Length: 154
Length: 405
Image (cartoon, rainbow over the protein chains, first blue to last red):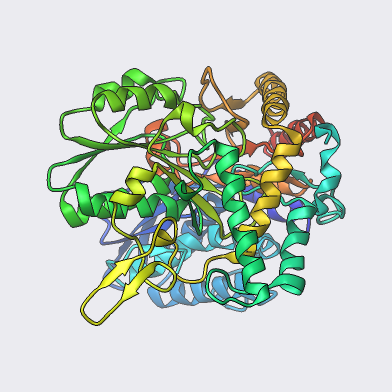
């Protein structure tokens, strides 16, 4: 294990200065996520336009560097994408965090994939995987209009 | 037994953990186990095992005697009047649930109040919450002050003529505050209110004398006292154990069972239904003996030295913020580092073998009050040394470096 894999510059940067932090007025989908063991929480807001494209996305919440960075990078990455594409990216990301060595989707550009792969360090820290995945599960919940609060503990 | 040389009694420190010497600073969560405790479990299962209190064969009688010896050891250790005042449970959580359930059944009704404090562990809140749901009782919380203490005055302020029981921690697992439990009991008894003490953090670190404290109930966790998991103790004054209804029904707790009705067993069997954690109870006797050998005064002195050294060291470390500043404090230091989330602190410290806990430590009410989602916590046991604290300090510096602080 190497801490440098976990706390890469890009993670520290996004963790410290999360992009898209806050709430905007005309969102039409949102969902909450909780990590009861850590006390982390996240609230994802997004606006899906008539063409099912994510027009805008933001999040509120607090948590560790990994969870904040993950939400920050995620929101950057899915803005402007179609719902179908967003879901493919989420599935690909969760698959990568869980077992795969790389990202397979063609929707993302190489530099975007590199950015996302910076979160792959959590694989070596099983207790921290849920920090990286919370906002992604919450995004899915928002898209699916689920009223259930996402919880990392099943 | 010399406390400064005690690490070697604990097999966990024999080997490297992830290539590091283990710096174990999570004893408030659970303590490590001395070899004699681990060996006792093995010996019991391999040479002496039988169920207790039922059969008449040799092994059953011998096991029953061993089991009852632990009861006597605990009685003496905490200076209870009678061995029947010692009830074995699966942990302190079950001990508190036992009291909440049976006392609640018999003595609480709608509008009655249970008085807790803001620094209680969830295990001394949730069992009372069940009663709030079932019986519509009220739960009041005595407030903490800015130093993270609960004073006698704070307790007094919340006592009303509806208060039916007071249930408070002996020692906070977050701020380390030692509550004035003797004074709380005196005050409560003047008003005929019984008191339960959650002694999870008190029992491993402080001298216990039930005659001096005079509380009605005291809950103990075995695994925080260098004992096995799955074993706890409820101390209760005999009058309560005789008066309250049984908690769980099953074998071992009955006197006579007929189709028309059932009579219950004598104390303490009345509260020990089913096959108990026999091996753990028997091994717990070794934990008590281990602590007696070192001497609780020596344990208190050693941990106080570590605490003073740790507080001095961490106060000097810029950006470290220590939670609470109680005048009477046990070996617990909860802290935050500005700009680093407690979970990141815990992961980075772990890389150097420094094991701490991060989170709300099962005290969400307290963390809400402090307006902190989580804290990092270093807590001490007999095996810790000043060297451990130096390593903690170094690891914190590494943490700050990674986060460019």
